[in-house]
Length: 82
Image (cartoon, rainbow, N blue to C red; front, side):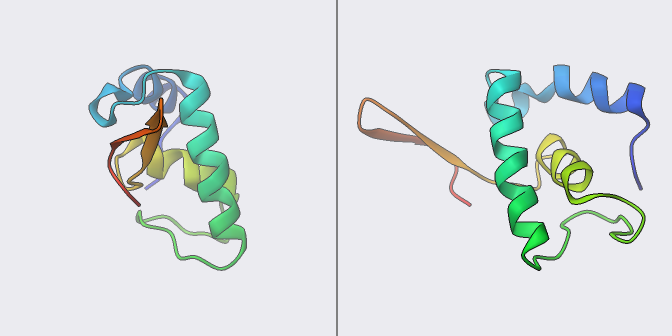
């Protein structure tokens, strides 16, 4: 089920559960996931892909914690892997 714009804004602000430390990182993760969806990956959330664009689906997946990731700082990996 798709989030309303207000719910999505609130979820973006409260997305600290995945160690997303900035909106910039959130957008980068959603953009990468959106590319995967455009190339044929299936959505990891219950949403109709014919009614929603891949960017919207990807953002909701990241906010809901369905997309795992890792990031590097000073040559060391941190976080979770996809």
